[in-house]
Length: 484
Image (cartoon, rainbow, N blue to C red):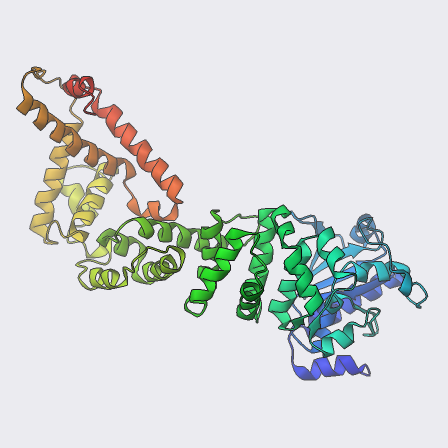
């Protein structure tokens, strides 16, 4: 281990040594086949700083088809990135012949470096990322990157105004570097970022979300948010500006999932599976859904039962950050949990087998409906969780169902009998509410849906119940009077 940088990295115990060594092996394989190749970008910076290496990008003279011939498992992912998944980790590839590379700066043409490599490193925009690593662990520093790193400064390679004018996303790139390394952004670079921030509106929202999440993942994320706020870097993008201000107000109180959820709540989107892994997608979607639910309604015993105290308290905390006029329901959540008479369907003092026996039948959808309705009544403390009470209530529910599902025509009500019309309307609403519960059946599933999906499902259930009740003539008088 003669290389001073390699020894220093190894001694630091930073994560990624074997990953880096495998990357060097890949370089050697490519070079031995005649394809000039280097490791570039963040991996080289982290190697120099002795920080964990968790991503490696390789630039190569080989094209995509030539890479497949060497590494058959190489793929292009949904983002059109060329990826090779190795037991040591994932490697991404870029190409010397990429037509999108900038024209090399004239001042560097007389240096003893591959002109294509100069173009690749120049495309990294900031000196912090503009280094390459050779197969013998030599750091190739064309743009005085090491000096910038040692001075803890983030600066652009090219003229700062043009950097952000040509591609506004470079504003995000600078902020991501700040969040991950904590280095100061050079004053003229920061000034140019402020002047050119209107260009952020031209970036696709999904790409902006990716950048914002990268900022939040950084070790110095809070410092970056403070910088954005102090320098008004998102002034031209109200949603992003609002997100930064609100997040800073509660930054230390929120966990990672809650911070991401706040972002999606403010920009008014639900997470895209294209951008995050399945587990994170489910957790963020659930957090957003429940936060929106409790932002507009009071927490109920059924919510405590179905969602759980921890998740409700998490969403209550998030709702306080998200919605200005929201009043915390934490005390109510704790109170409902403390006063809960049942915490599991197993605690219901009537079993499925007992219900089957009670109705002299078999296991079917009616048994499930009755059991769910009994559970809800016990949780809401409408009835006691006593075997005798539950049996009596089960029989009442069964009778209600028989009456509703009875198609026998009843005598029509006279137009002048207002009392009868009023009682019929009460009966209609009672039966409608019952049928909606029957259609929704498993209420717990509602909390995994977005607010729009949940409302659509409830509207659909209400329409089904209404249509069913109108199959008999008894409610026609209500329809004629436009009471329903």
